[in-house]
Length: 119
Length: 107
Image (cartoon, rainbow over all chains, first blue to last red; front, side):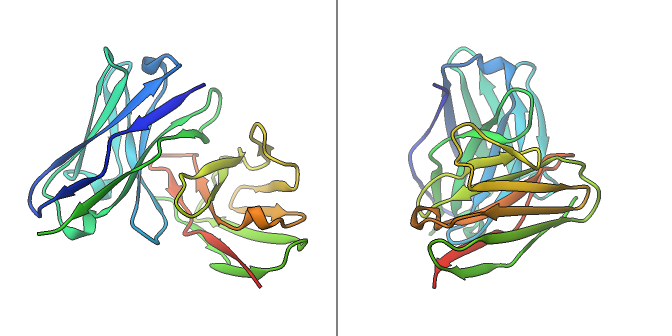
């Protein structure tokens, strides 16, 4: 049973950074893209980008270039997203997600990590 | 970026109703549209992939259709447990983009 376990809620001050984690289990971590999605409370879903742990390739939506940085630790099957230069607009839930074999639907999702940016 | 225009924004429905929502892509995305259900406080769940394929375990009252730029998602017999926000997403080209969602509410 594929599982994506995300790290706990974060409270951060403006201008600082947070690093979120997404630990994958029960599949070959290096074979699948890991996607990240943002959702502000009460708002819609926003696609941030992906990392392919097999070779470290990344892709960022234009809006998140310079804001988000993806890394992956293949030894622990964990994907990370660093969010830098935080502002209140970064306060949101952040989900990691994985597609299924053969198509790009996000069949597996983490439970989400709430980031709150406040002074 | 491809813009996914989803309509309506919200719907007031009754149990047993047939529910239809639409998603229009700003350019041709082939069959590469997925539909997700998100209940309050939960992660989204994949219901339909590649426009019309029901994901494993999804009840057959949920159906999707369309291709190119116009897509339709239907719940044939609305159940109370289907109250949620539904999102379309194009996965034809990066960046993937979501529609703004359709919220189903009880009338």
